[in-house]
Length: 212
Figure 1: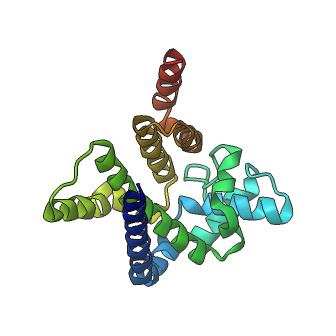
Figure 2: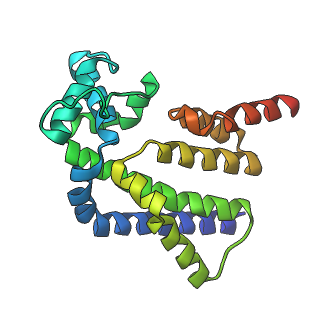
C-alpha cells in the first residue's frame, strides 16, 4: 500500500508539473487571443463583477449594454445578440475571484483552466475505460482534443458549455469509480448550462434512485 501511495503521489506530481509547464508556455498567446475573442464569457464576467461590486442584478439590461459597448464600441439593434447574462444565477459564482480582475486577464485564466480541464477529462475517460493507449496514439488523442473545430471555437468564445462538459465527465467517472460524492458535486456543477444536461441529469437521478 505504501508503494501504491508513492506511485499515486508521483503521478500527481507529474500531472501538476505538466500543467504548470503548459500554463507557462501557453499563457501569453492565450492572453493575446482571449482578450479579443471571449465574447460569450464577457456577459458572465460583467454580471459577476457588477453584482459583487455594485449589487447590480445579473439580469439587468445594463449587463447587455456594457457588454455591447466593450465588444462593438456602441449599442446594437434589437435584432442582434444583446449579450445579456442568460445562465442560472449561481453561474456568476463560477467566475470566482476573476470577477475582480481585468477582463483580458480573467479570460486568459478562464481559458487556461478549460484547456487543462479538457486534457484531464481525456485522462478520466481513459481511466474509466481502464485503457492506456500507446504514447503516439495518446498524443494524437490529446492533440485532437485541443484542436478540433468545436473545441477551438468554444474555447475562443469562452463558452460555459465546457464547464458543463468537464463536470459531466467527472460525474460519470465518479459513478464508475464509486466516488459518489464527487459525482454528485460534479453533476450539480454541470447544471450551469441546463441545455447540455437536460437528459443526463434526470436519467442519472432516476438511476441513482433505483439503485437504493
